[in-house]
Amino acid sequence: MSGTTTQINHAWQVSSARLIEIEGFIPTPRGLALLPPQPLTWPEKDPGDTLDYVFEIAPALTGNPGDTIATMSVAISPDNPGDLTLASAAADGTRAVLWLSGGQAGTSYTVTIGISTVCGRSLARSIGLPVVALASVPAPPTAITTLGGVPLTSPAGQPITAD
Image (cartoon, rainbow, N blue to C red):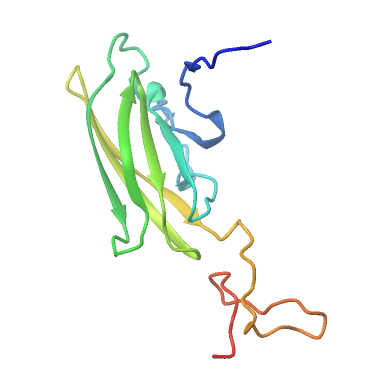
């Protein structure tokens, strides 16, 4: 049986595994002491990953049907050679979708997103993104090892070598 190769078109959908939702704006009764909000943090990524990270602002727009993201700005800190980079960004209604790549293992980055909506609202939030060496890298022959043969690693997860 002979066959032909057909290009497959996939429906793109953002991952819910890396979705952060803004806290809602709920009225608070007078005299009630509130705890400070927890910092927003995406799950850790490996330096070799290029993944989509989503920031949902729908709770901040409750009661304003039709208001969506018009523009956004993205700043990443720290911003040195080899650090986390923004590969691309898009808006999908009330979701800011960022494709992030690279980064230095052992570094926690702060991604600050500034958003303006079609109805004139603006908001900004900072979201943490820890970069951790999740993929195992074979140790070079000059790696210092324990008696059991396990290579010693730096805090960034890199094998320590004798040279």
